[in-house]
Length: 318
Image 1 (cartoon, rainbow, N blue to C red):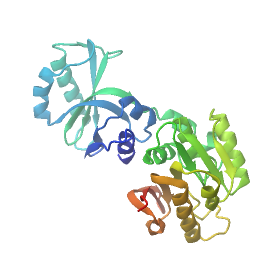
Image 2: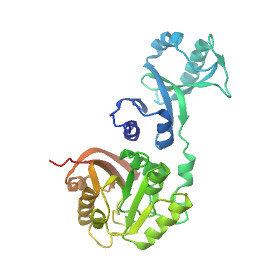
Image 3: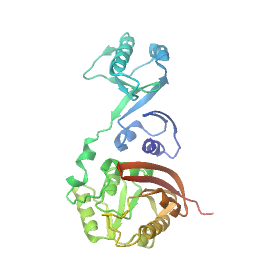
Image 4: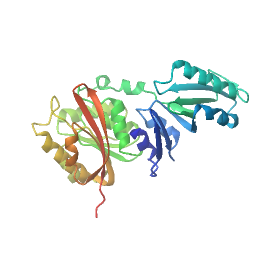
């Protein structure tokens, strides 16, 4: 939901949002096609028509206008209290009402009426479904340069989206590793700037970026503290720093590394820009001096490991 809300605010205007379980209704100036092309953690995007109770639905449908002449209805059950039969009954009922004015076409309709069934019935016209297969195809083990410690492409894409980086803006990852985060940013049309203290990772990132057709990536071997000295301020930063264990920190204590990282990111980021960073613990949040925490999202990796996807906004200078 945070990812969708961030994309919904790309126009520069904060979008209003209302959640109902796994259903999210956004009031945004951003085109639906942008949501479809950018989102990684959603399943589908529809142009909202109405959110109401099942009893109120009939009244709305009597006057509802659909584009085109043919339609089909699909219902997605988003709450365990609704049985498969509930979904089928609702689809048949809505189809019967609409078929009085439009023709049913289950294979190639002009319009698909998508209903998300949760606490309410959320009705919309389907704009597109999120194709998750490309994310699976770009998993670390499928890239030319591989490394076992790498974010899943869907999470890497969500991390970039949380920064609200628009097409053409610059996204920096000062701990680029194998380049998974920069890869997703580049595929969304962002200019990518990355670095790593490990030269092998730098070469590997360049190979991966080139393999996926991203030609304008700037990848350098450098320490995180050097970015502000070497480059002009960037629009956004999305990064997943080493967090110990099997990940390399060049023997630097985690607390020291993260403190330096926050300081370097603050210097490298434009005022008002956002830093989306994955932290190993909530205890590292106070290290973000000069930032305001926008949001924090715990993501359970496995039974003994939870990581925290945090979004910080750089404070304006007084």
